Amino acid sequence: MALPRRGSYEPACRPKEKSLSIPLTHSQRPRPGRRRRSTLCSSTAFPIAFLITIILIFSFPSTSQASYLSPRLRRLAERGLIEIDRRPLPAPVDSPILPRQDDSSSSTQGPTSTATSTSAAASSTSIDTAPSSAPSSAALPTPFDTSIGSNFTSNACPDFFNKFLANTTFQQCHPLSLLLENSNSFFQASGSAVLLTQALDASCAADLNSCNAIMKDLASQLISDDHCGPDYTEQNPIVLQAHAGLEAYQPVYQASCIKSAKSGQYCFVDAMSSSDNLSDTYPYYLGIGLNLPGGSRPTCDKCLQDTMAVFANAARDKNQPVSTVYTQAAQQIDLGCGPTFVNSTVPVATTKGSSGSVVVGPTSGFLGMLVAVVVGALVLI
Image (cartoon, rainbow, N blue to C red; front, side, top):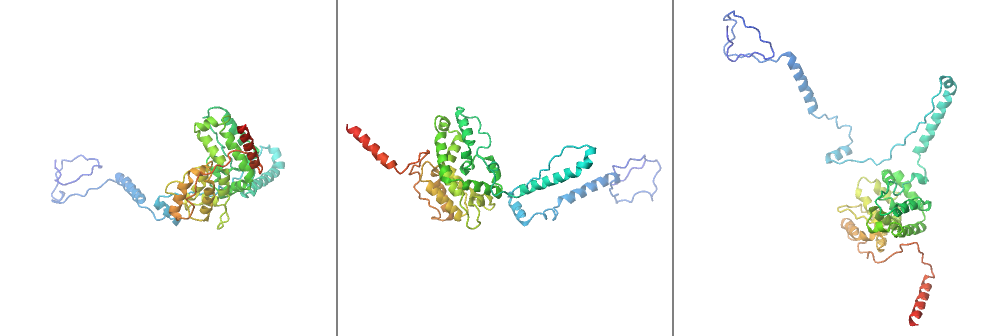
């Protein structure tokens, strides 16, 4: 049996044939010094070629893959940033569910039902898409609209919460100071400039003096021993935040109701809707005693100056939560906006405002002198 010459190749995928004992002639023998080319059988070459083609197609990025992105989004993607769409969600169209009708009655009542459903859907659409100038109280954000929990020393504290939150006089004040930290509905509304403006319209329409007296009275009752006093002493977060929000009603009211001369909108709405500088919202939380985050640089504009002027005046009162955070925030703002942009030398916590609902009348001075004279006379006797 003739042996193949060294260097000859026999494909592995080809079945080996039985060698014949017929000797090869000189013309049939392979030429010396030349190797046979290696080939792949067709059953294996096609899948491999197809796989290589698919890999090559998806390995190189196509110029059309990012063509749908706007230049702004492409720049954000290159910097690894995410842009949040704060526009309001489209109003849903509620289609009424009609009861099933028999075939006998469908021919007579079919057109009427269709007309009714069409008119109902049209009226629903017009109501949802056109924002009301005076929204109802049920549609406005409310404080503590989620569970306040059960981590209290007694039931007297949560009972007091439920009582004053259900009070219609309290609800008509729409206190923004209680919404900043403890309102899920306000958090949802803050993503829409329309809903946020409606909330501020209601809040700024409330009578400041009467509502401030109500909040001061509730703040005093809240920390009394009959209600949440023990929980306030134990530093219960819900009680602390509620007390701070009640005390800060007036300065937060005054700061949030400032309107921008440039846009004509509430400065607070402009700050919450701004995607250029997220730090613009932080100064409004000074009113409830939250520090200005380190490194934040709010926009140096008239809105910021007017807002800080309100909090500078309130910081003089040691009962106001802003008195504990104003100086650091003012110095940080002056660092970015200029040394005299806001007043950073306000003597904070030097006065004590009224924490209750007692109103001092014009005769209180005379009564005080009268009491002093009576006490002095008793001492002499």
